[in-house]
Length: 433
Image (cartoon, rainbow, N blue to C red; front, side, top):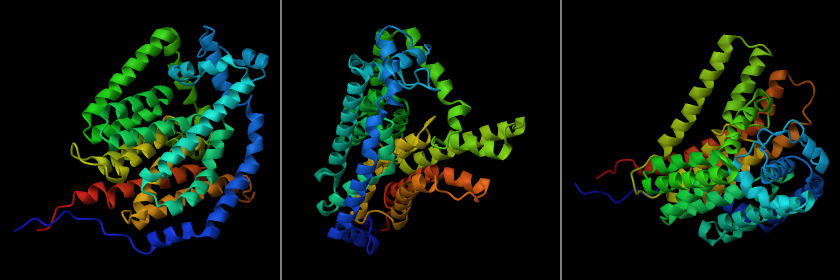
């Protein structure tokens, strides 16, 4: 009995073809760009008033205290913030890793407003670079779709929350895209060092090291460990051990009920915390507290287990369409200790991979459908929540407030199906001879 040729996933017909033609229709392109321009015009003027507000004010004050020899994790930032006209409020201590503050230090040599616009330009450049890499010739996305996809990316609600709060996730996005490209060309050192750098800056991207483990890419994992160790030691040498370890005090602060209880925090732990707070009220008994921890542990284990099961593969096997890497990006968000609405700009990467595969007929209908549902929910949620009718029950309002997490979960499911339906698991099916 002879061995049959390797099974090639069949080309999708119907939906994939119609999506391609719809997004390439000139009137559709014009409508999408009109919406993108409206978003820019409506939101852009708000950004100029954010130079002294969170989260930029928090970065600036924390890095300034560090540069002047203080301990930003144990120093009350309020007096300095009042002196410089920068908002502190409830966040009166540094909460970001010492490596991030060390890298941000050069901006504190400028006055706050010029520093804000430099930071804005850095993030705008990161956005442009990200879209150029994700939609460019190497992406596999047909050229006629690029204008529509660029408009959809600009209209994406998490992007505007990212700029509103002057966040840093677009920089992490660039690093993850470069990591993906390094993996595709077999550059283990670059891939490992990029993940190490991203983890030193924001911690949660360190979850991506799990991708190297399940792919048996031990060289990339080794470079990740080496890079994180070297970067960590350099930070300790420059910042000092005592000040650096003050970051662990900040971890307890950002994981306190104050921040876990805010619906904008879409980490799985935060959602579980809010669910039990709704069910138990202000005074949960010990049994409910125990149940909450059990649900959290089991849920995180299930999410991590699903990610591992969907992406584990023999050493040296190709990650076709970056399916496994895409799922690990989503896992890094949902498994983070805290994650906010603007973290979802990181989904640009996996969704671009999914779209490219869909255009080639290598994606299932349900994966595409779940991805579309995630995008639509994120477009509707910020509008629907403030205008929700008053007669909605407390339960209905609670569900509505968690719609952003639902969108994240839909994206995770889409990428899980992306990895399994026509990808890693499908390619492991036994051949028929």
